[in-house]
Image (tube, rainbow, N blue to C red):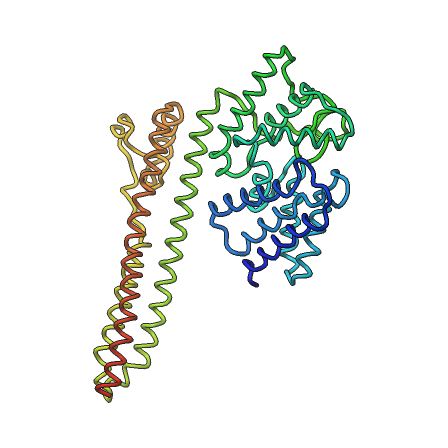
Length: 418
């Protein structure tokens, strides 16, 4: 199935729905919001290098996730949007498994968000992406205006501010990428609201005590006491000023390590492709050409060129994936100088547990040692990746030129010497 074409049809369908069917768009949950969510989901999906199918799933979910607002009341709009998406996708020949994935991504945006996999996490973070952006203040005003229209009464700035503070305190981004990219700005937005609260002499907002007329993003009066909904502050991550630098650094290490691991897997996959393809070429050439060389000596040179290039490509691919293991032990002097990385198995697999335990205790009790180990680990991964991709580039280059030269050589041999 051409998912790129289907993504274009989905965009056209939603755009036409807004233009021809909807007479009055909501202040916040409108076409602009939907397009912003799609853009955010696209950005996050590109970071995680989703395949064509998974990328379509999150994009389709982003287009339909808030369409339920125009099919009925705000409450339960996720289910209405999921049903609308299912109908459209079924009409366009999408398989049931993919439709269920799209519906699950839409339902995961229901507050409080509880995504179960990466695709659902991406859509959830795309939906609330603006919490960690400079545009948060303007969008928050639009949400208040929409809430007042929905409840058919005014909401005081004090009540709205308290509800928004509660949201920012209890919300957390689900993907490492968004935590690294948006957490700091989201914390700044929260601090501005808290400072405004203090300036006005308002009582400090408690997670368990928010006003009943506050409006929490996506659905009205949700996750607040006195509204019939649950407050899942225990599930959400706590935001603390003192933790902000440390959490940002730790997120950076997690994202960097995950990216390096992903790139390493891609390199191994590329090497496996090269080894498999050239192994097939070697088998075919040796099986078919060996018997014919006696009567067709003009094909000897082209055959040798093809065999030599394939062997060279395989060799470099094998070198790219061949593991290199260090000595497997560390000395007390290395531990004292903090020059050993105990997070890499190659530095301790020959050590007994007691010595390794003592070393790890020292790492955990020394923040400088811990961060230096993480930095050294990231650096080592980068060196290994650089070596892998350098060998893979050589392998693919040899393979490409071998094919070109071998085809030309076979052509010349057949035409001029056949």
